Amino acid sequence: MFNKKIIVLRLPKNDIVLSRDDGLSGSTVSWYVELFTKNPRKTLREILRNNEIGKYVITATVNSVETNPRWYYIVCVVCEKTVHPIEENPGDEEGPVTFDCLQCNRNVTEVLVKFKLVLLVTDDSTEEAKFLIFDNIAYPFLNKTADEFAEEVAEDDDSVLPRTLNDLIGKTLLFKITSKNLKSRKSTFIVDIVTDDEVIIEQFLTQNLSKDATISYADDASQCSIMKNGNNKRLGVMDDGVVNKRRH
Image (cartoon, rainbow, N blue to C red; front, side, top):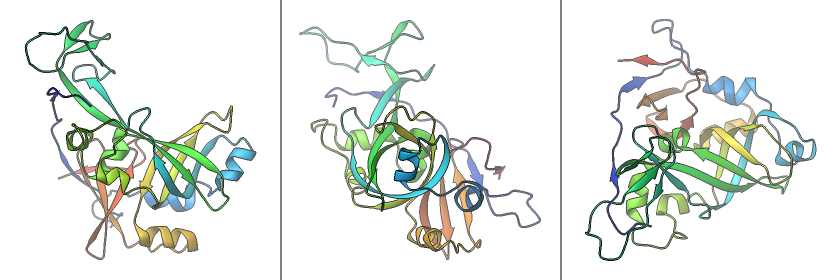
């Protein structure tokens, strides 16, 4: 981790609300369709052994969260391309960390920290795979920004995980994943949707989900949570046009 201060700019938030189509708002929540009707459910063994490419829904248990490579990356606030810290000479005055932005062709100090979580997961088929969760999914799911987690372990070794990420280990989650290229059994799957809601997971396993749920969005980068019976549960959803949004 960096010992010197990183200047992190947080993007402004816009409140957005989604709800199941009630005949009045005209908005439709599609996470139910995505998880329960549109995409086939598969085990890891079925996907890996059949070399299947597509979108699938699966329950899996997190065995570990990788720390090498790190669970986050840093981007330029202007172009949002990855930047790298510049080595400083001994004796340089104390100040913000400076980064080299190849896209902007200049040194920058204003950056964003974004999630790039790699989860090693397994399921009942006993196969293992890596699931990759980018910032637009991880942020709403974890309810914190990557820079908040980075600050939590700023003085620790890179192998130390923030508590919330460490708590994912051993948990069973429901995923919608995209399989694009299965050249080897070590391929990584992109996560489009993830939830840790125990009721949804149980009902998924029994294929008996009640549709009396609503989703609330906050932040146009896809922050949302399940609201059922007054209890907030976590749901990260890819904002790819599948879900219709309605602003206050």
